[in-house]
Image (cartoon, rainbow over all chains, first blue to last red; front, side):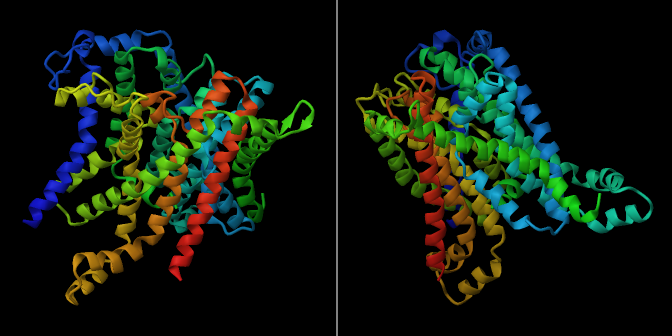
Length: 265
Length: 272
């Protein structure tokens, strides 16, 4: 009896989470004609790529998707270049200013994106960076950096310092010891941080909308054209934005608890 | 490079970068909000307050938080406690329940638009033609945004609670059970107190993020349900007024900081 109630609860929540995903996929793969029908068919009776092709063929969608990927990858690289050394320092050294630095990291995460975006637009206008993918990359890197530092520091804590010291005793420079001994062990965790950063960048819409006019990322493009686009376009856009999330969760299942659960503190 | 200076050199790039992209914009924002052509001014603030959309936006944002957060935490806690009983297919359930973690607020809004729109799936299922998202039905419009946010953002709370539960030793719970404590009693006196740090983090995080709710409402209702961040976007993008946009942004920042400090205070007092 108790087992049954437990399963019933789990199934109810699963339906709440999964049914909307099924419906948006269904809408994205229906023909325009069947989307105009009422009531809408609830089963994939007429599978068609017309709606999704229409979305991908709309002006600006493919360039925006390319921009999104470019911004995402550049953000990952930049956040790792700046964040990994800081994470390593936090994991390995006790130094003056460590506490204030960690507090600073936590504080920056409490800053709403909107507070940064509007003044950044002015700063970027003055410096000629406005409406470029670089502007969005800089904002996204700033947003991802605190998390990158905290995740990588947790990763480095787990790699034993003795091995690194041993390598140095045998004549490796600190840098060689880091690259040859620490990096291989830290790589899975750092890859997880990279995927996390990419998804954050892929999903961010407000800052990207404020910092660009023509060089839009995909969510910014969808948002900008929202009010005057047909429903079919919006459904296909919604689906296109959701797909990476499904892939991401499938890859990251193992790391989720560590990343969102503990490092968020 | 002396070993003593090594950590400083390692964190220096991040410090410079963050100062440039956090501290500097913050100062510029305050300048934008409080200076005009003739020096310091409160004109932008007055204009913000006199705007007919400002107070509805503030009220909707507050209402959203007050309604959403308790329901969200109840749901997330239920989800975590269900999985703690180790049901069959727990791995599968966990996977489905965390999928929304990686879904953006804009995408979530569009997903639920397919459900709630006039000729959408909800009306199709029940063969009705109720206009859930019409400005004539503010209650259902608001509830649609709540449901979409509940769907999208509960996973985050759920994951934080699950991670917190892993740190709660089963022994305490079992000991309480041996001494005859019922489930509700154990929940109140054993499990929840130990979850406090996790709940605290989740509460602060979710309140700050809920204050920033924006794209969900845009996708579902346009400007029919104005929210504070949406108004910033309006002032900046459509009304071309970065000064008022900055003023609203600073209001959001102030409320975020107040919420964070308020929660920390409350939790510390409750702890005593």
